[in-house]
Length: 396
Image (cartoon, rainbow, N blue to C red; front, top):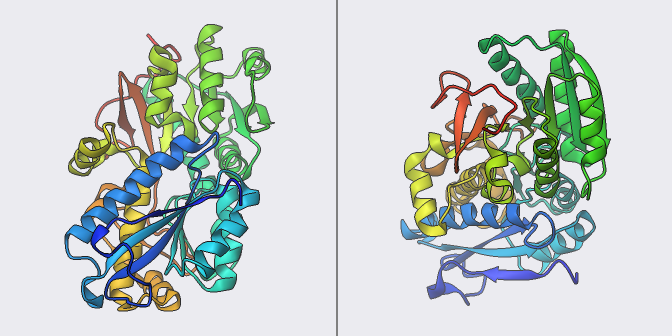
């Protein structure tokens, strides 16, 4: 547990020290996120979205069916999958949480979900891996699109944009980190290419946390690929794009969400980020009023992980309200039936949070975004686009 420290994040100081048994005072929700290590940027933005949702919920009266009980967060820093089980168990057995929110990282979510499933505690997540809701578990709920659906849309949307630009594409390269997230998304990319009759000339898994992207980029350069689809967390995404730009490899690049669509991507690359496309599960330009509240509080645009986790948190809190109880079993039952279409949830592409029998998100659909200056702009599908895509591998 040395790297999985628990941080009590009480969002209502008036009731911060009330015992859990006094349900009219406090309902605890656990949060599992990478608050340290290489994925800390995602943990911080995700937690910001969760906090925004809780602050607004508590300000509106809290859990009204429980006499105005306030939501209190207990945050577990889980940077690696091997810390997930013990930290999640502590949230359940010691903190007595009514539900768990997280993680951003698919491999951590999978490990944590084994604990929540045995304990009968609902877990709501933004992580992408297909297997999260593909194991027959009853207590796991996935708000985001599945990884294979993200990968399929990553290819299909890019192909549609290339056709709009009048640029035929016959060969592509797929580069993906080899954990649950990258593997699931690469599967969808392959399926899309096969259906379209496009040749995958590079299909390369690489170990998470590379220190040199030159070998990968050299393979792409020699392959004749006309589009590149990298699926990476932040540090890897910075290395891949920087190396491509420095080598003047001007091939349209379509990122796989994660590292490609958070403010730290732009901060790390500067002008090299310009015109990079990426698939995303949501975008702040579709939710201006929500994003404005987030920016006023945290000083940056609201990335997709903050949006989706904010909506997921709202759904969990309203499930507590509908259950009229902080009993995890009753919260799970309410969450399985919920259709929440208000607040932050209005700003995600589906417009609502609801789940099928497997716990997968109903109506979750990916969108395509592109870096323009310091902003991410939605460019596809056309009915949601705020601007036309610039189809170019160049940053200028």
